[in-house]
Length: 226
Ligand code: SF4
Image 1 (cartoon, helix red, strand yellow):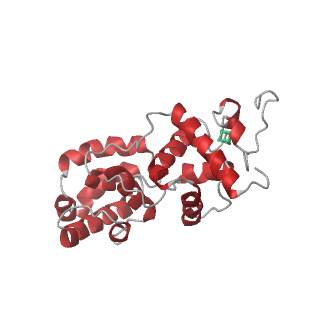
Image 2: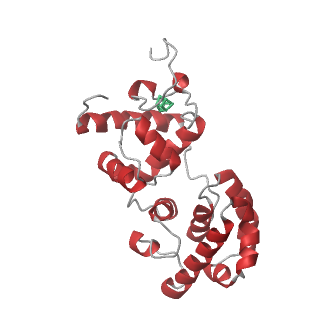
C-alpha cells in the first residue's frame, strides 16, 4: 500500500498466497497433458486462446501425434487443420513443427529441461518455457506471467510494470523461489474466478483487505472492506 517497504510488501504477499492457497487448494495447470511434450504443445496452442478450447483440440491431437518426430514430420496443412480452432493456427503450426524438429535434432526427441535450451526452440518464449519447466519438470527458474498474472500483480501493487519480463523480475524478487509455479497458478485461478479483467468481484474477494485495488475503477460497497 502507499509508501510500503519491500519487506512489508513481501509480508503482505505472503498473506495473499496463504489466503489464495486456502481458497484454491486444488490450483494447478489447467492445460490437459500427460508428458512434457504434450504440455509444450498445449502451451504453444494456448496463446490468445482459452485453456478450455485448447483441451478440446488436444484431445484429438494427442491421440494422433505421439512424439516430437510425429509433429516434425506432419504435413504443415494437416497440422494447421488439426489446430485451426485455437486461432493464429498458421503461426502455431509452424512453431510446433520448428520446435519439434529442434527437439528431434538437438535433444534426441526429449523436451530439454533448461530455460536456455527451451527458448532456443522455434516459437518458444520465456512464458512457455516457464510453464513447461514449472509444471512438467518441477523446476522453478521463473514466474509464468500471462494476462491474469500481469493484471492481478498490478492491481495487488506487486509491480508498476506492464512488460511481462519486468513483471516477472518484480515477482521473482518478492515470491520465494519454491513457490513460483504455485504462485502463478493461484493468480491465474483467482483471475478466472474473481478478479475478472472487466468487473473484478472485489466485494466478495478473499484478499480484499490485502489489496490496494490499483487501477480498479469500480467503487466498493461501503461495508465490503469490513
Ligand atoms: S480486491 Fe479486487 S482487485 Fe484486488 S484481487 Fe480482489 S478482486 Fe482483484
